[in-house]
Length: 290
Image (cartoon, rainbow, N blue to C red; front, side):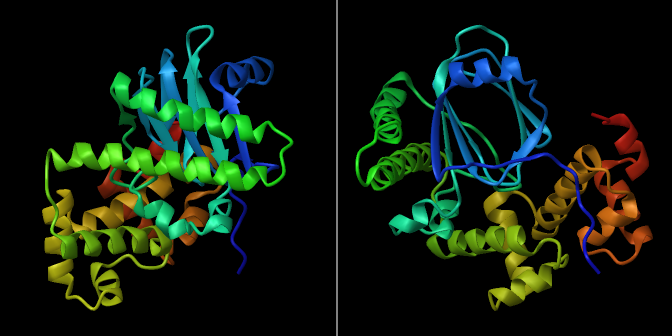
């Protein structure tokens, strides 16, 4: 049976990489009204100065100066700028872009910058830290707009340096709060990756534990200890997020959404959704109409 179309607007990137200033994006937006949408590419927004909000899935973040926002493919987002002449940078690249230059998609997700269903927090930087990042952004901008030979390789090098520096900034802030045990960190990383890949197929903790040759209890203890959320809650949060995305932004009915998320029984899906969100699926959809 073929899965039904979701009808969520999806933007595509005609080139492997693109750079735009925030002012340029806002100028385009004034000509074509923007609605919540998802991309098939990565988006990084570096805000030097702007006012407004950035909605990523169902969380809204106030735009702050010296802040970097990361959006993964398939996340639904909507940027609203409320002041003229924002100062910032928008970096767009396809998932396979860096792979050409020995940087795999798995390495990209391991950097802990892009989407995890329990954490999509922007990276707030000091003025000195943003000052360190800007030459890397300008390097990408300069190469992308040039006609030089091998320009994409140069862009890829600048982009890798930029992401590595963001990872360092984020890691430095984490170290101040907590030092992870290496083995437990590996278990958490693998679990998060597996959930993102298989949440539509696997709904039980033991199915993810089996992938790491662990007991369900041990996996749950590690996930709870390191993230504050049980493994079961983590899986259910990811399922609920996708259910809400489809309820809010698609024309699929409850039965079709249940099928997309691996539920053969609509009653089972309805019970799960109500327990997760505190309301029936139909009520949620009515209360969050676009």
